[in-house]
Length: 620
Image 1 (spheres, rainbow, N blue to C red):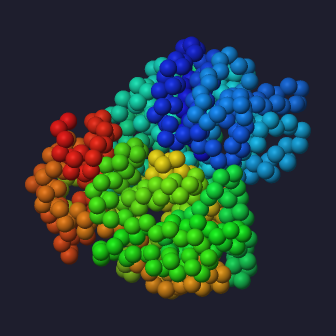
Image 2 (cartoon, helix red, strand yellow):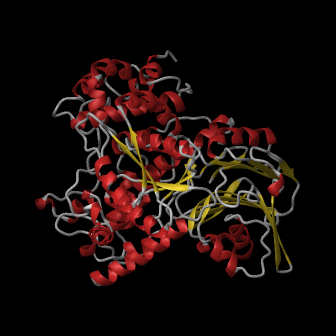
Image 3 (cartoon, rainbow, N blue to C red):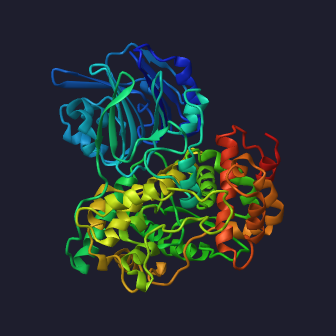
C-alpha cells in the first residue's frame, strides 16, 4: 500500500527530479516506510511505501526486462540494504519499471503459474510487471486485488496506468501542455505545481445534491479519475489507447437453490477473506455490529488461530443508535480482542477540518468521521492493515433504495437518488442543473444485458457511489494514518457469485441481504441477523443544531458558500438543523459545513489549523 505519482513529458525531455520529489513529499502520509523514484527517457515515476508484504526486498520501483524468453527483476532501491525512509533516484535504465499502490492478493498463485520467471523479490507487485511484459495492456485480467499501477516501458516508449475493477485504490491524472501527470491524490498534483485547483461548477452541484461526484471528471478542472477497471497507454504525453475490465458479471440471475447458495457463499467468502489476510504485518478489522462486518468477523475467527482484533466506534448521549452493544456481543461470541472507540461531539468539532483536508476528492459522507478516528486507533494499536465490510450491501442487495426501485410508483417505488439534498429548501441561489445526469448514465448502462431492476440498481451503485464515495472515504481516512483498508466483499469471485443470485435470495419480507443473513444465522447466531436494526448514522444534524445559531452566520460568510447560497437562508437552515422536524435541514447543513471547510482547504489553499470554529473564523 503506497502513494504513486509521475510524469510523461510531451517534448521527450526528462522530467525534473525536483518535481518528483515534491510529489513524493505530498504523498508521504501514504507511505511512511520508504521512497523510490526513477527517470527513464521522458517518464519519471515516484512512490512512497507502506510496507505490508515482503518487508525486506519489496521496495519500489521494481525493474524487469525480457531477454530471449527469460525475465529478470530487481528492486530499484537496493533491496534489503536500504533502510526505511531512504530515497534514491535511478536514471537511464532501459528496463521496464513499475510502481504500485495496492495489494495483489493472488501473487502466490501467479508466481507458481509463471514457472520460468526468476523472481528476485517476495513482493506481491513483481508478478504484474512480468505479466505486462508477456501480455501487454491486457495484463490486469490475471490480477486479483486492489491496485493502481504505473509502468514505464522504454521499449515501447510508453507509460501504462491501470486501476482495479472496483476502484478500491485511487488514481488521478491531468493532460497538460507539458505532458501527462498522475498521482494517487489530486492534492499532490497541486502541491507539486503541476495543476491549479479550479472548481468545476457542474461537479460542485453533484456534490451538494448527491454528496459525491460521478464519472471520470473530478470536482477540479482538468483533473480526471482513471475509472475503475481502466488501463491506459500514454505516448508522447498523451493517452493513445484505453482498455476496460468490468468488476461485475453480465446477464440476469442464475437459478440456484437456497441450500446450494449457502454452501457456495461459505466457499467464496472463505476464499476471499483468506487471501485478503495475506500480510507480513499484524492486521485487524472494523466491526460495526451490522451484518457485513459481523459476517467478516465470523469468517476471520474461523480462519485465524489467534483472536481477531476488532475496533468499533460509537456515539454516547445522542439520539442515534449506538452499535457498540451489539458489536460487543458479537465480539464476545467469537473471542475477538475488542476495542471500543468513542466518537464524541468534541471530536466532531475538533477533527472535521482535518477530515475535510484529507478528502481532497470530496465526498460529504459523515461515516468518514468515525472511520478517521478508528484508523487512528488501529495505528495506535500497532496495526497497518484492517479488513472492513464495505461492499456487502452492493454485492448482496442490502440497501432500502434497492427494494424501493423494484416497486411501482403506486406502491411507493421510486428511482434511486431521485431527489437532491437541497431540493425545495430555498437555500441555493440557483436550482442546480444537471446534477443527476452522471448517475442517470450509470443507471442506463447498468440496466443493460438482461439484468433485473435489483441487479441494475446494484450495478449503478458499483459504478459511482461505491468508488467515488465509500471507497474514497475509506482510502483517505485510513491512508492519512498510514493504515491499509481491505474489502473482502469487493472481490471478483464474490461479485461473480453474488450479483447473479436470484432476487429472492437477496430480498425477502422487506429485508435485504437475505442469503448473507441466513448464513450468518447459522455460523454466528449472536449477530441476530434477522433482527430489525436501525441503519447506521452519525448524529451530525444533532451536533450542528446544538450550535446552529452560532455556526450559521460563520458558514454563510465563507467564500465557497457565499457564491452559491442565500446568506439568510443558510442561517435559517442551521438554526432549524436541531429541531425535531429538521432531519432534511440537518443533512443539508452538514453538506454546507463540509463544503465550506473543504473549499477553504482545497480551493482557497488555507491550512486546517484548529477546530471548526477556528478554521471558519480565520480571515483568508
